[in-house]
Image (cartoon, rainbow, N blue to C red):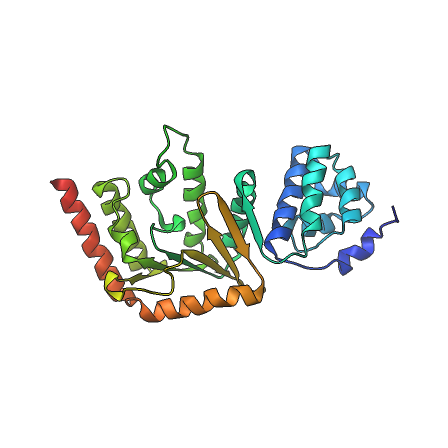
Length: 293
C-alpha cells in the first residue's frame, strides 16, 4: 500500500455533507469510542493531527479505501467492522441512499444529525403528526402499534430529538399536515386531544408553523407520500423518505428539486397558519368530547 501523507489530507480531503459521508463518520466515531481511544491517540498512530480525525468523524472529510484501511488498522477494527465501514467508503460517491432492515438505525442516527444542523425543517405528513411534534403517549401509540409490549427506547429517542425546537439556534419547523392526520384517533380520543393541544401550544408560542391540507382540497401534491426536507446554512437541501421497512435519503439536487416544488405547491394550497390553528383547536375539542362520552 502506498504511503499516505495525512498532514496534507488535513487540507486537501474532499468536504462533504452527504448522508453516506455522515453515516461513515458516525461509524468511525462509534468504533473509536468503543475502543476508548481519544482522537489524539488515533491521530498519533497514523501520524496526523486530532482535528483531522474530527473532520472525518463529522463527515466533512472523505477518505479513499486505502486511507480508511490504515485508519481502521489504527482503530483495531474487527473484520466485520472493517468490511462494513469499507463498504460505506466505496459507496461515498453514489447519489442518494436507500437502506432497509438492520441498516435503518444508521439512517436514524444520520437524520438526527441533520435535524441538529438544519436551519429549516419541513415535514409533509399525510397520516401522522410529525415525530418532532409528538407527545409521549402519541409516540408510544405509534411506535408500539401492532406489537406486544415492547420497550420505550425509540419513544425516548423521539422525545429527546425534540429538544432542538427549544434552542435559540434550532431550526425553523414547518409542518404540512393532511387533515386526516389531525382527525385520525391515534391512541384514543384522550391521547389525540392532548396531542392536538400540544400542537396548538407550540403554534401559539411561535415555535413551529403548521399548515393543514383540508379534506375539501381533494387531490394535492403530496398524495404519493409523506416526506421530510432539511435545509442548511452551508449545504444543499436533503430529502428523507421513511416507509415501513426501508428509508431513503435523497441528496442529488435534480432529485431534490421535485420535492421543493411540491412543497411550494402544498403551501399555496394549504390553509393559512391562523386557519390551520383554528381547525386543529376544533379537532382537539371534538376528540375531548369523544373521550367524555
